Figure 1 (cartoon, rainbow, N blue to C red):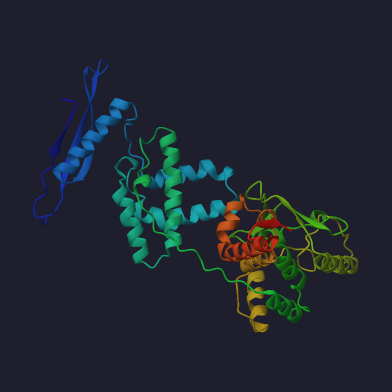
Figure 2: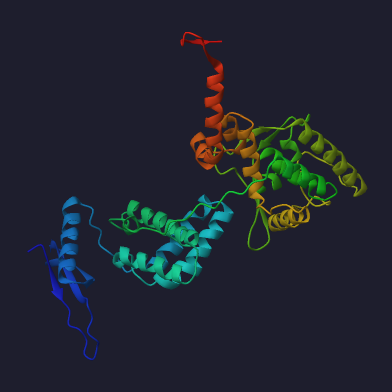
Length: 391
């Protein structure tokens, strides 16, 4: 016999349950050193049929050489060690997010379950309970992503034979409705905030489609001396302890060069002169390593303060208040409406592929198709005989 199941006795004075406790026993062969048979016992809760099915799975793993003898390491212990091992490979902000979701969400609920006993139903119940606590689907799905990538590493290292997160369906996340401004909105907004300390920053955001982190990490050395283009080389983030970190672009496509419009170049040229004068007044030398958008003393702007300023100024202008990130969407949408090739838009935004650009701005692409069809029709003319000919 290669394996069998044993029903455990239910303790006295316990209420009847719909499931039973079982021990699944796997025969691992004879150990000549210990002079005895080697066995591996597993605890299982469920019906007899489910226990037999699990026994079959384990025997199949044993035959395929994928069987892993479990230890008593809990999911919480494993995730803690996994975080330490991968801290150097993660961006500081990403590490903070991973650490937060493990400590605050995953570990309190699933942390005491051993890796060997972790089952898909544990994860599914966890996701359901989190949603019942009014956690957003996006937050719960992020927890799933962390668990999945951590368990994938456990399988790779031979700690687990399979990734149970593969058998679970995380909650679906609805795409946030994109909200953008039209040309008149942008012109009105920039006119209202002309005297604001954030004028040049928000002007550049709307005219380049750069991310907030990219704008706040921009140095004067990243703007060519004639102000014809910007090189995106890094981003600025603020950690939970209040410190600032500069990070590399998240992908090769994010490291890019963005051509400036003449008006944006003019705005930045005047802004540079203003900063030079401030440095002279403070007795500070102006260098190419200075941040473009910063406090008067050269210190970084706090990202959340920039976002709040955007919302306040948008309300002051009497416009529909959109997110600062929607300035990026507004830039892309207007370029596509102006019949600029999607490939150019993709390069300006730093999307990893043109498909992402087309999918994200499909609502604009529909209008482009209609316009393309009309232009194609204009490119051909029907002569009186009904034959088609190029103009």
